[in-house]
Length: 260
Image (cartoon, rainbow, N blue to C red; front, side):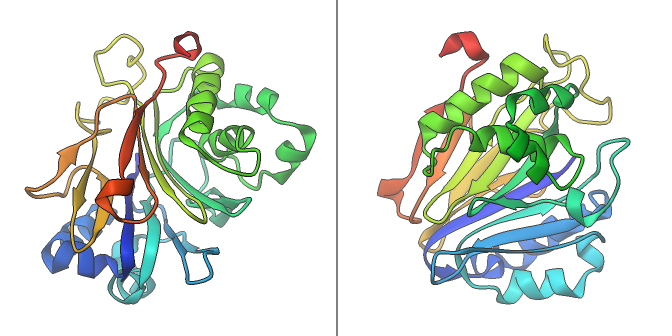
């Protein structure tokens, strides 16, 4: 049970610049529940992906408040963690995960994630640092990058995960050196396939949306936004590579492997 937020802008901007003080306060307030760590990955001038993460709650972290107000980046992804039962609150389990020049943050649950290990090479299994389903999911997506991530790579990776591990939600943000991708793939409580969704989640818990503001896009999971946001359809992806409207596009994601 986590929260996601990312941005892609034409010029470097802070989170405060993009969403304003009131919205920043509402988003930060979610850390009272999502209190098992926070992290951010961002792109700097040289296009390298940098990151910072802590295992404490964001709303109790001076570093989080400083980052939100002062870190200027053309693209970033931010994660507030609520740990799945049985998973330790450690740095290695805290999002975002960083590998191969990419950052990845996940809001979801893959009950059969041990099966994902069978999709990885011995080298990739050895590179795993934590024990989360999220890090394993990220590794499967990287199986299909071949040095460059495209929407088609993501579609193939999602199909492989859904065929192998019966996920509840694969919602995620993925930051590369030249792009930011959003992934919206989940079941709702009461839907066929959604039986394992925990009862405390509302039906719209996994919804994600985006808005355009100050020459850039913000994409985020719900629970704090005001007006001006557009909801992303379930089973869809979002690509943002410059913050320009003409470079924004969405793409379909498979229901399962047979739909590709």
